[in-house]
Length: 288
Ligand SMILES: C[N+](C)(C)CCCC[C@H](N)C(=O)O
Image (cartoon, rainbow, N blue to C red; front, side, top):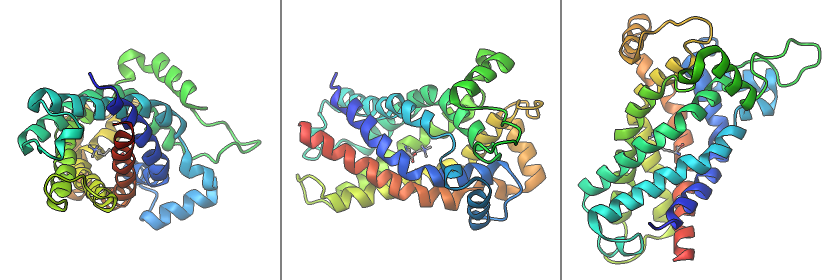
């Protein structure tokens, strides 16, 4: 099993992640709290109350976990394609796999990475939703003091299964949309690259950026539900399950609720995924 894809997936994921984290914090707040009027209002408030550090809340854990999560995504994707089409990463530009195979490999990667991502993503969302200023002397400490404390408290208060709260919604969000992610990327690269050649850096950047946007737009409805399920259980349980969360969210806030955070998600998705795919391709070419 080629391991280069796993390592390249890890490094490229970490680069994209740091770049995108401030956008991600704004997104999570907009999706789960009602105190902000919009993107700018949310940014100004975070900056005023919590300084620049506020934007980077909850980042250390995703950085550590991206090693597992992105390497599973890219490693499983690439190796599933190898199984389906018998072509390695290097041969794939000369003999492009069918869109059906790309979609299936993307879904498989998405499904398996969601399982690894679930507890890490839960902790990230819980930490991002703490609005207390970072380390202010005299003020009461936030409920969770850091990722490890957060994980331990969830485990203590909500049990092992508590760590997988929202995992179902996450799996439903990621399985089809990771298929869309890779189809868009490979499709755009193919479209703008002469037969048999490797795609240029500019093509990889643009294709990666649009792949991020396309998959995030499709993922946003379930992303909102996922974030809400993850915050549920903090004080008392409100939702009975994914469907119940969908129904009561729509009842209370209308259909628009499914698109909360879509603008900020797309603005984040372009740079993050452009950098992720560019570094992924370059690392593999460099090692190949
Ligand atoms: C499938 N879904 C849309 C959820 C994510 C697709 C892009 C994943 C990337 N690591 C990022 O954070 O943007």
